[in-house]
Length: 254
Image (tube, rainbow, N blue to C red; front, top):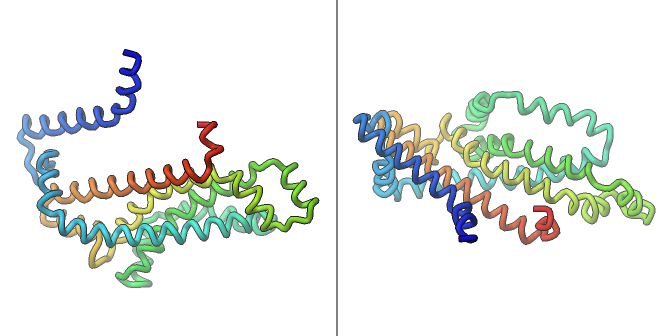
């Protein structure tokens, strides 16, 4: 009996999803909703199966765009965070620009990138970078600034350079915040790639969704949404596993 609450807590998300899908299926059947308006979960599942080969092809394209943009974002975020936390005038000059960059509508930038760089890989990767760069950078900067000042002073007194202090003191201390930013950005990366594909692409899940919605194949559109959700969840889980092994000292605080 004592194990029952633990079992229920582990399976709570699955139970909730099952209930929601059951209500969705029941509602569509009860009210006779047309499939081109709202297909049932079973119809969406059937679309996933029948369109599996096409979905895999487009998914690989979107995943490549998302991962490339995500990796570039990580490299840029670490570089920018290092510079801004070590050069005071640079921090004052560019930190406000980081905030302002998030006020520009994503759809506008995606359109401009498509006009400037065409329908290839580059504009999609740039959209992903813009979306993912900010959460990683801000979380990393906050983590770097929260380090114990006495530790930093001790390293400087021992002749350590700014880079040595960064990699041996600041960055390890900021890893929990860094991984928080990674998890946030991982969920955004696939969405950003899809947005870029909506506005101009020859393949990818965004392109697939654009084509299928024009033919009112809403079951296939929702099937693509399901794939996007699954990919995002997998990416987050991979980052959580990496976090578990790379910063074991953080497990005690969880």
